[in-house]
Image (tube, rainbow over all chains, first blue to last red; front, side, top):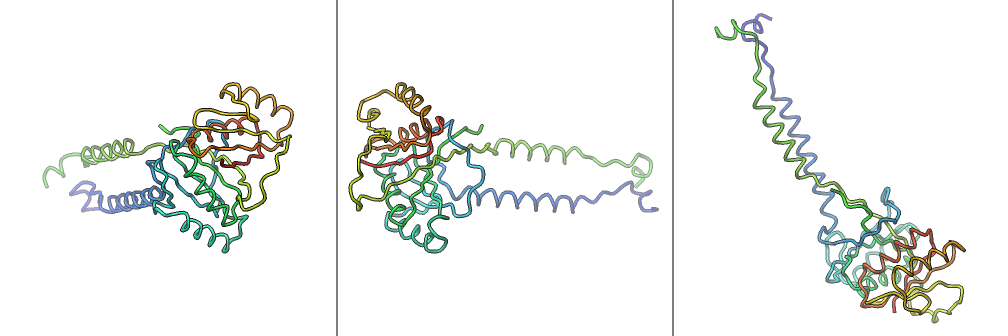
Length: 139
Length: 130
């Protein structure tokens, strides 16, 4: 008390700043992780009437086809055989009813490249395929 | 020391508030609202290894070519396709719609057709390539 009277209220900001920095670092790191998995260069076609993706089912795999037709999962470019192998492995692990393929294909890409991705999935035993489309553009 | 004693205890908040506003502005600018993504579900018929598909008459066949659409092998504009599909969807929502896509057609056109089907409530969609 005597100290306070003499110097006025001394508020120590250090713990607050520590805390804020921790929070900031946490959000920056998680934000980056979430973004790294999809290719932002892909322009999805618009579908204002399609059902919204509420929550990703646990067995969802996102396969991407960019405007030049290259296949990728999580930004790793691959050919059809590798894609087939990956889908096959997932099917063997959790069963083909639980594997969900979400195909993010660029609006400009030709159907032949989309077909290649679909064929690889079908060969691995996944018949149901979801196409991702833009329902509403954010901002 | 003398100053602290004489005046009201004061904490200068200005630099902190400046800083917080800077951060706020930075985050507001860098935060892009997320796009809402739709999912359009289709079935893929078994690959060509199986016997050629039998042509059933009650199937609704939509063809997608590089430069236009066909409905049961007749060339049709997207507007008329929408109208026709609307009428057919009124009869039955469970009928199978087979969408045949030409290899050179852009993916955008397939999504347009799938979006139309989703709007009309048609759920049995198959996508084939030709």
